[in-house]
Image 1 (tube, helix red, strand yellow):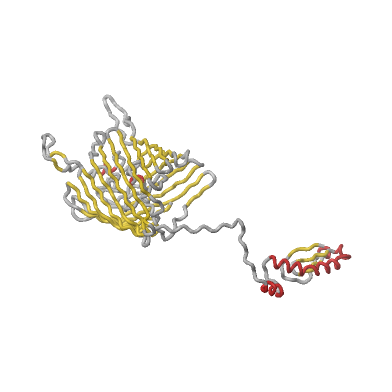
Image 2 (image 1 turned 60 degrees about the horizontal axis):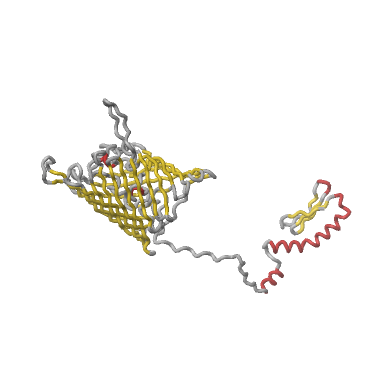
Length: 484
């Protein structure tokens, strides 16, 4: 004889065809008796049947099912004592107060595939933009609808100590710009570029990191910010530009139209020390390679030494780990930093300093201010780059309740005047037509419904150039979509 558990639904006795066994369903059990046990079967059945009601009632009470009426009454008559907390129970931590800025939704989860030894993460940056701008030498305005940036991003890790970052860009896609060397008088579609491609080894975490590949050299804070995390509509105009007149001087190392603006190929050592309060970056880069000489005597090209760049940043409050920095952290960090850099190759030199303030002000908003002071001189090595100084500043305030930042920006390029007649000592000085000075002043609004993931910016600038025929205006309206 055996006892098998089953559902609470009662059934009639069932005779099994195998060896004449029978089963009796009572309560929550099935009693099965086989033919060889007929002698004691009925006695055993009677004994088990008498004991099953108690077992059934016990099982129902432990499983939380409905109790019998008399047990209900007994339970209701006795007041329930409050349960004492266990000795190991800890009070739940109080939620942290919300910062001055809360987006409409948290940042999206990364699109990542990973295993124990490697990971890969995918992202995208799109910046549809409207631009209307005039010219210092012509009347009326040019109007464009185009894609300022069209980037596909791939990043990830390998084993424990290695990271990689790779992205492509199709800049100013379908923009009509007659001064663009790749666009001409048609809509700009130069093709897709490799924007960044570098690997990073971290043998000691953030203390020591070695980057190798195609990257942003360590210049000003604005120069090493992510294009997806800028405060204004774009980088400072003079962040990468070295001459107002010559488009090829946007990149002092003549890779414009071939490589991405501002990038160079090399190797860099960087890290955070003193508890994250000091960041260092120093690198050796390809720079400008001199041409070969056909002779006689013939001489190979590219025999000159490399470009050297270095940056030191003091973080008075929070640190900024990672390769790319941000123009604002929307109150997630308290940033007060001072930095300086020096960039040179042969007779070319570029140096300056910068300040970034990005501080939450209680629960109301975030104050942001960024300023750069720089100087450059191409010397005899890159003659198109004249000796100039530039001043750049932008500031604004994020009103957290409405996720809106009014922002102002000012930039100035001071170019030295030249003699009217260089061959005559004491000749009067006049502005240099090949190296003009320029003032840019303007401002606008940035709306941050989803932080850096999706935002809208509208900006106006007034441009005054000396020498120049006209002052002109520039209007930019941009929508950004970004995730990584």
